[in-house]
Length: 175
Image 1 (cartoon, one colour):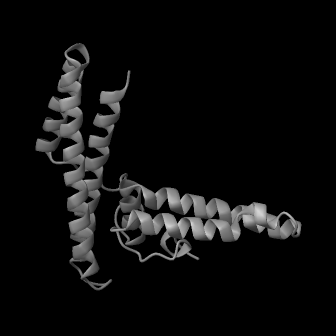
Image 2 (cartoon, one colour; image 1 turned 90 degrees about the vertical axis):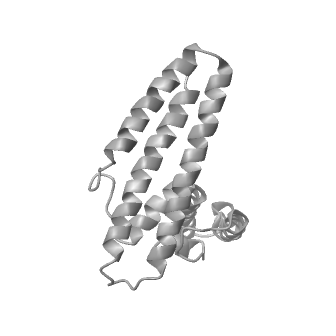
């Protein structure tokens, strides 16, 4: 098996039903779990441990929409975060203002932090909707279509922005 989607026998796409993912993980986990191979040879136990670790990694990656999108972008041949660091100036200015608002909320009313958290979560969810839309557009194109790279680059930009917003959410909840 070459990728996490194959390991879990799921279609290679961004949109995944969480219950379907959970069922696939549990079914495969039961089949390869090391506890079921204790009576076997050392080679069988070692193989079971390796397969179990790979399955756990696949599940952890696909369970989180951000890591799933990042992983899928890599599989599709898109740029990595280090290859494509660009974020629009307006977005960076907005994030600088958001950081200032986080600092103000820390010293202000706890309700301010709750309002900010909801705002950031909404922004993050909106970015994931854009990710879904781009992956849907990408699925309509052949692997050699020249229109793929602009979509892949746009996806990387959205994921860079989503990572930044996730950092804001994390920082807002930090003590």
